[in-house]
Amino acid sequence: MIEDNVVYIGNKPVMNYVLAVVTQFNNGASEVSVKARGKAISRAVDAVEVSRNRFLPESKIKDIKIGTEKIATDRGDSNVSIIEIVLSK
Image (cartoon, rainbow, N blue to C red; front, top):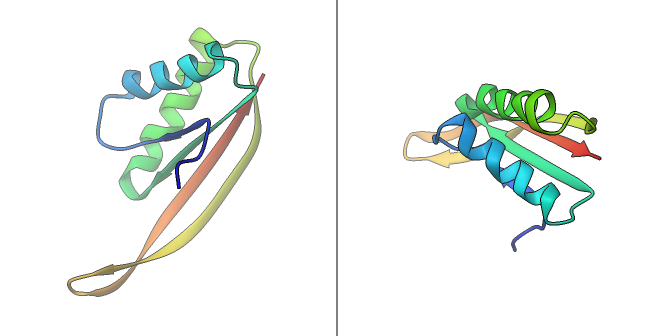
């Protein structure tokens, strides 16, 4: 299932995700959700802040959700932190 207007944060440079967020808004989205987990959480926060401060000064943070996901690894289950930041115009 692919969700509309969602940017998943991984290991790419922050500006790649900033471009993805700005592109979503330029394509007519009223909200964009930025999701990350684990070590990528700080990159997600950076991407949202750069998007807001440099490219989308009219946007606001609508919601921030945090939580924990259980992930099965070869060494058993592991807990990973998750974040979802919702930006709106």
